Image (tube, helix red, strand yellow):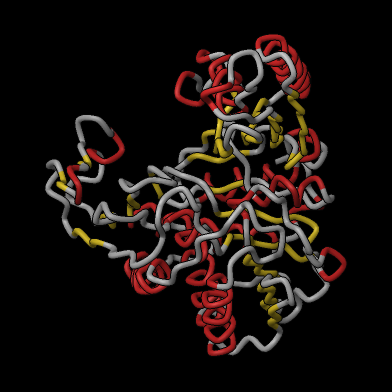
Length: 427
C-alpha cells in the first residue's frame, strides 16, 4: 500500500504489531459489569502499567495513568505542525466477562492452508462457515486455542495504535500534527467512559480501533439501555404453599419467556434491535433479571421499555401478591447524529482509506464502543476495523494482514490530519 508521500514497509509494520499483540492478549484484563468502581477489576491495571512503560520506552514523556486507569499519551507534532488541532486514537484495555480471558494461549498460523482448525472442547474454525477465514488462505492468522477468548477485542486495536506510534517516531519524514493516544478501562461493561478526564483531552476528533474485518467502518451504533427487573414473592413451606406461595424464581422465568424471540440477538441483524437477557438470579422470595435493550432508533428503545412494563403487570396478574419492578438505565446513545454534524471527520477517514486502496464500507455497529460515549461528550469518534473476528467467543481469531492494514490506516490518518484538511470540507 502506498500513501501520498511515503512508501511504508508493510512487513516491518507487521513485525511491530504481532509481538505486541501476543504479549497483550496474555495479560488477563477481564472486566466485571457488576462492579461500579472504575476500573471494575484490578487486572486492568496490569496492562495499563505495561503500556505506560512501553510508551515511555519509545521516548514519549507526556504520558499519564489516571487514578481510574485511563492511559493518555501525546505524540508531539513534527516541526512546523505544532499549531494544528490534535487528533486522537482510542482502544480499550478490558475483555468481556462472558468468556474467560485468563491464561490465553494465542495460536499463530503462518501460511494458513485453508482447512478446518480443530480447537479445544470440540470447537472448530471452519472456512466453509466463515468466508472471511477462507479468504485468509496463504496468510497469517492468530486464533484462540478454544479454552478462552483471544482478546483481539480490543488488544488488536491497542497493538495497532502502539505500532503506528512507534513507526512514526522512527520515521520523522512523515509530518503530522499533535496526536493523542487513549487506552480506556471497562468498555465491555457498557458504563460509557466513567471517570473519563474529558477536561484534559485536546483532540477535536478521535477514532476508535474496535472493529472487525478489513474495510468496515462505523459512524452509527445502537442506543443502549440496561434493564433490571426485580421480582418480590412470598415464602412459605412448599408443603403448605397452596394459595399462599408466590415464587419469585418462577416469576422471573415467566417474565423472561414473554420476551419476543423474534427480537433476540440471535434472531436479528442489520438495523433490527433486540432484548438480550444476561442473568437471572434469585429464590422463592426475591429474584432479578438483567437484560440489555438495543435499538438504533430511540422510539424503538421506548417501545421496548413500555413492553417491559406491560410484561411486569402481566406477571403480577399471574402471581397474585407478587410484585415486579422495572428499572432502566441508559448506557450510551447512537453517535450518528453528532458525527453527521462534523462531516470532515469521516471524510478524512474515507480519504485515508482511498489513499491506501482500501474498500470503505459503512456498517452500523450492533453494539457500541467508547467512541459512542466520547461522541456524546462532544468529540466525534468513528470506529475503524482491527482485523478481529468472532469477538466475545472461544472461536475468536484475527487476520494479521488486516491488523497491518489497520495500522497503516492510522498512520495515513495522522498524516492527513497533519495537512490540516479541516480547512477543506469538500472531501
